[in-house]
Length: 131
Image (cartoon, rainbow, N blue to C red; front, side):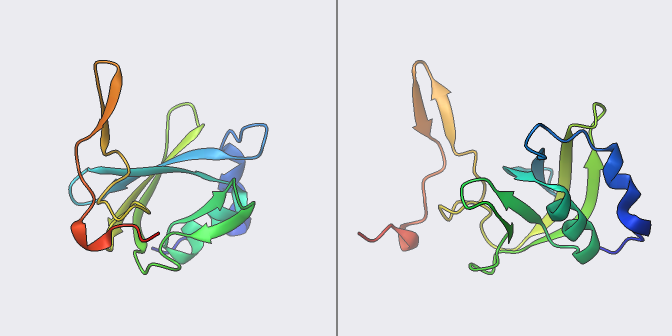
């Protein structure tokens, strides 16, 4: 994905929160499956638009990270959308491998049943956590 950022003036239309972040929802472009949610700052959104691969802001590590930089599970961005309030971004991507750091296809594998969260998509056996 390439774009003419023309000084990236389009970034001014995003309503950044008090920490300079915007919510980013990631969706599989071909199926519509919601894969994950993360945060982006101006640099992450600009890099995503410029380079065509999803880049986010890690709130815990206080740094940019390209999705899949260590796992190889990249998110090739097909489209970037801004919601009607300009305070959330939708990335439509073509996901390589699992999207979740737990090796699941997506991050939304827990469903509320009564008063408990129940896993509805178990992790693959071949990727069990080693202690």
